[in-house]
Image 1 (cartoon, rainbow, N blue to C red):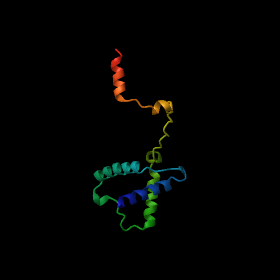
Image 2 (image 1 turned 90 degrees about the vertical axis):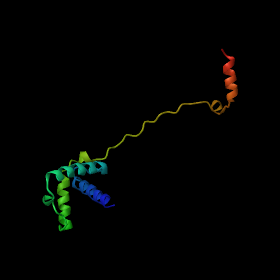
Image 3 (image 1 turned 90 degrees about the horizontal axis):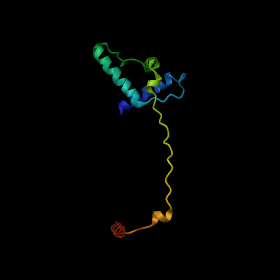
Image 4 (image 1 turned 120 degrees about the horizontal axis):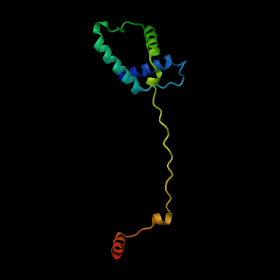
Length: 117
């Protein structure tokens, strides 16, 4: 539940940071997660834990300003949801109702098949 809340907060911060240039921006949770995962792995390899930023004693207003600054650096096109086109309408084939509702016993079909060489 905590991870979802963090992702929801980050999505909203990114949308807010790019609101002026991309008013209809819809950030994909999947693409955001991939971006975070790839960035975190690189950061964890490059920086020792004592050099990572500490946010425990930061005021919420300062944290929000920092998040907005970081979100402004992201490329919105990499994080947007992928829109799918509607499925094409396929016309259904027409079969006469009397033919569709007609019933022929399997035994008669087999018998008729044997009769013809």
